Structures are given as C-alpha cells and as structure tokens.
Image 1 (cartoon, rainbow, N blue to C red):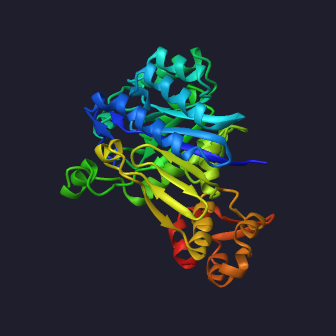
Image 2: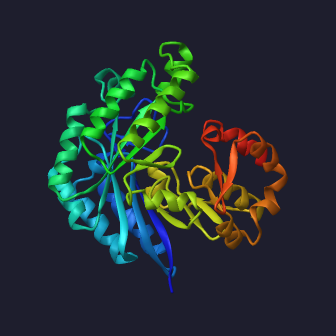
Length: 370
C-alpha cells in the first residue's frame, strides 16, 4: 500500500508586495510565468519517482489567481500526470479578491481543485489600504459569489487581527460581513511584524501603532466566541471550520506528515530531511538545487510537540509513540510538570493539549519543553 503524502506548489507572482509580506513573492515578473510553470513541472517529474499517493494539494503564493487560465491548466494537468492522486484528495488554491476571473475558477474546477482560500483580511477600506491589498471588500464578496457559481462549496476566508489602527469594533464588523458569505472555513491570524517589510519599518518609525496586547487578545476572543456561536469549531490556534471542513493539508503538516514542495522557496519534508528550494526566482529558474537539512531524532520529537500543540485536540501519545518509538512522558515528562501544574496543558483521552489559558502563552510552554 502506497503511503499518503501532501503536495505544496508555490506561485510567487503578485500585483504588488503587501506591507506585511515576507514570503517569496515578486511583482512585475509576469514575463516569467510560462518559464516558471515549465520549471515547476520539471521539478515535479524529478520528485515523482517515490512510491506515494497525493492526499492533499495546496497551491499557495504569492497570488496563484494571477496565473493565466491556460498556464494554470498546464500546471495542474502536468502535476496530475506526474503524481498519483487519491480519488478524494483535498486540492486547495489560494486566490486574492481583485484578481479572480470566472475563467480561472472554471479552470481550477475542471482540473480537480475543490477548495479555495480567499485573502479577504479586513472589511474596512482604510485597513486594506494600510496592508497594501489591491481589493475592496465588495470584490471579496464578488469573488465568493463567482466561486459558488463555478461550483465550489469549500471556501475559506483569511482574516487578520492586531493591525495598526484596527479596533475591536472593526473586527466585529469584519466577522459579521464574513459570516454573511457563509464560508465553510475561517482563518483568523494575528499580525506578525516581520523584519524587512514595510510594516516593520512603519511600526519601528512610530508612523503606525499596533493595538496593545490586551486589545489584541480581546480581538482573538471575539473571533473564538462569535465563530463558536455560528457553528464553527476551532481546531487550531487560528483556524475554525464547519464540521467536516477542517483543512486536511494544514492538519497533516501539523501532524508532521510528509509532503513535497514544488516551486521557488517551496519547502518539503520527506523522511528525516527537510528541504527548501531557492527563494530567488532567477535561481530557481536556472535550476539551483534545494538546500537540505537532516532532522535529528531529538529535533523531530520537539517538532511533533511544537506543531501538534497548535491543534486544539493536541498531540496523540499513540501517534507520538508510532512516529518516535517512545512516549511523550518518557521524553518530556519532567518538562511538562510545571505547565500542567499551572493549568497550561492537560491530558485528555490520550492527547496532550493546550488549555484555553495555555493557547494564549503557547511559546512559554514550548520554552519549557526545550
């Protein structure tokens, strides 16, 4: 029986760089799109030799919805020719409102994509402008309408919390407008100010002021309470889904399941090796090899905790034993005594999980485990 793995494909093109973005994305490189698709398919051919089936596909960016439909068709057809996909594979594609065309959505649907993720972020025009987004909320609404017209039922909306000048009222309004679109999944991410971004420069200069810690926590709690009231189950720190619509691709990554990464800057995880393709687009196009890192058994055990504790169900001791040949308590029992005593983590039905209190201070729990 073939093992089941994930597949990630990175599309690095975008209209312009968002203020908070430190991903490998490039504006004004449309002339490289055709060569890029060819390079990804060459890489797919090289990496398709392993005996495995694709359980999940995630096409991220950048802005995948900028790719012309003919090139997306070539990419998806080529990937399916290289890999064996399960009949019920979850196949996701990120799309940005303001770049979505019906022909693009029809192409995705025709080629097996069955889940969309829209970077909606916020309902307020001033916040979208501050983020450097090119769309309006009305375009986000239109994009969801078009997606449904193309036959998509599984739709995620990304929302952002803790933005400069953002208020609790703004978050409440955005949630209500998002819920009116009836998505199956919502991701509510706290802003991380990354070095080298416009956001970082503006915050450090004092031009933009972030909400204080208590306000950001109130924003997060508002998301948790509102979405629970509307039937969305929180299954990870930032992710909420209707029953049956949790993102399988991301959940598999948090459980340290293997995946192949294709494209500039894409990461992969196979056996005990993690690799990253060149983040520079020109380097990738000229065939510069990926950088590989061998993960030690100790690092692998910590990764299982670091990633697994993001999920509300926590880390399965049975799965930990199967993966690492030892129990969680055998490895981390001593370090867990303090977090358990403080009510930050708990055992429940064979899973070690963060409590609600622990979710607010996840990093401090991980420091104890280190």
